[in-house]
Image (cartoon, rainbow, N blue to C red; front, side, top):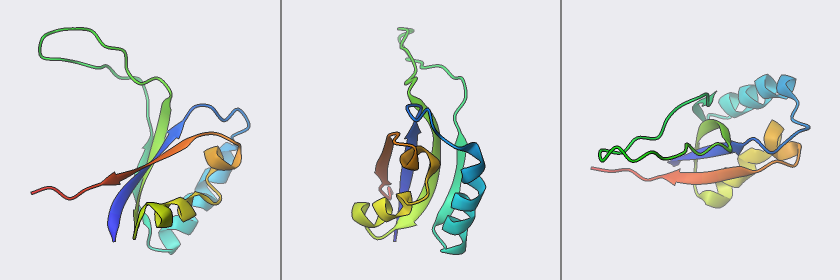
Amino acid sequence: MADYLLLMHDDAPGEVMSAWPPYLDRLAANGRLRGGSAIGEGMCVRRDGAERAVTARLSGFVRIVAESLEDAATCLEGNPVYEAGGTVEIRHLPETD
């Protein structure tokens, strides 16, 4: 099993906030959930001082375990952003030494 991030975009106007607890509870009951949170304000910094805009479309993340990207995609069922027609990026978190 490997770690994956489900990155929620803020493009789901019909997202039902009350659907989050049952969704997260189901991931936890299946041994998939490793954490998550909404994403608030922030800043993007560079050593050279150049200003960069933060990635505004990201609104939250859920960290899960899965066998593959395809297996991670099966964890989208019930995800409030996905179910409302919004975008969810799935990213592998490779192990590093």
